[in-house]
Length: 321
Image 1: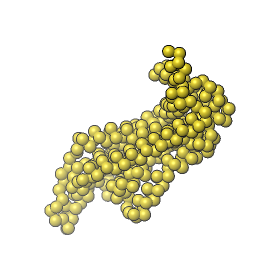
Image 2: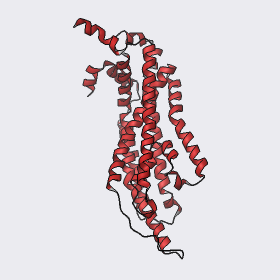
Image 3: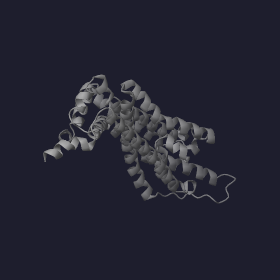
Image 4: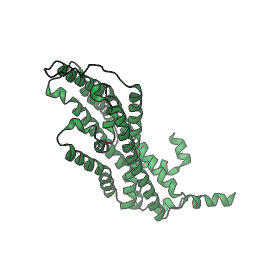
């Protein structure tokens, strides 16, 4: 794949080689520690579903700890993707190699796509880690919710206020489970594309690596602060209602609607699976719009810095033929 990219777009090979050589060297211990840490996080969350004490405080908050684990990994991977794209253009200006890159005759689109693809390739192991964590948590989250719903239904049925309206019928929706897996993979890839594109955008605007990272991080994490704060303002201290609230889905990058899709189907969760579809579309739209705007602005700025358009780059070849 790398050989094919080298032939199709030499900018990709140049950027990929630079990031690989200038990045931190990964030792064997580092290569083993990362996967072990991921396995440990998943195992820690999975341990809460084994012989649970459903009335204990720790078990009641297992879902929140699981979501917190995903959010932390998500934030780390997003920051790493931003870092991969933030130095792609700025280093050409700092190293005074931009003019040499433009004189190669490559178009602005080739330069931008080559830099973007190299940043995505550099962040690929981190993106894979996020996908593994998200997918591994799906069955754990399902079991946790099933235990909690069964516990509260049983408690309601055995209380003095039972009016016969609740039953302990639990089932699952196959289409929702399949969609949750597809949506998890799609959101993870889209998150990586969005963050690396924001890094490129910041790099072309500021022409400085540190400033590019700060600008891209501000843009990407602004919706988290805004929508999370709005959710807290509207719902108060009721975390169990956050997961069904659309602004919160925009704040956590689509994790909450995906986990609603794997909820067991029973009287407590009627209608939640359909509600999650709209939330997923909004999150995909938000990330897609941020990616499109970032790449479009970066392309315009690259052209203003002297890079050729696609037609100008092809003119010598057309004249020769």
